[in-house]
Length: 249
Image (cartoon, rainbow, N blue to C red; front, side):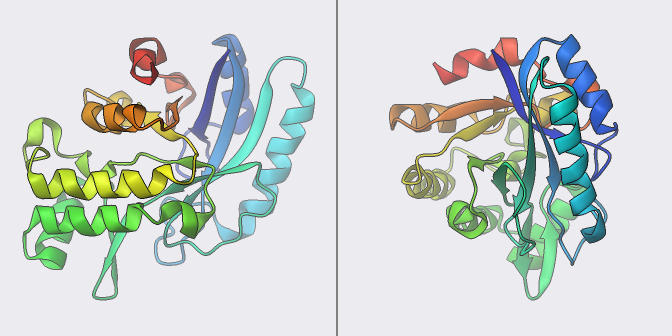
């Protein structure tokens, strides 16, 4: 059975209505679908669900569960940001993700744009990409404990704008030690890391999150993995799952 548990709708920064997504998933032969919303973050409301729309979102997904119960298994999830304290009650599951680094009281977005990413490194870390990576993975290692996650979202999101190591060296000893330390801590929770194809569908990467060497390390240490599209449009549901399913084996 094909499942895709990381799909965004127009309730946050996705393009389509939830019912459009459900119908498209059925047409694509997806057996289990999770529609999620970005948790409310008071410091950045540009992409997340408005605080007063959370109840409506949950009610909408629950109604669709019943309407399409004979055609698809539908779940209602939340992608809980590390710095979000909004309650997760009422959701079927939680994806724990780190979208920001907080430095000197400023919440710097990691994946919004290349320009914002470089500004974060320059202003927050004096241009030291590997110091930034060490801080990121230190926070990432705590994401399950902080968010109550059932799934670990896009583990190495800081590489979104680093295709071909154009900004920093992911083979550097400091970088490798940082991500290995985070993986080791997260493995203790015995929940899946997602193999996320979202950056591929949006043209930023050629391989999923996390990088192949990180996936290999997770697999060798008996960690769990699952495919996710991180789709923001019904057109990219289960994006290239057939090409990357082998990474879980």
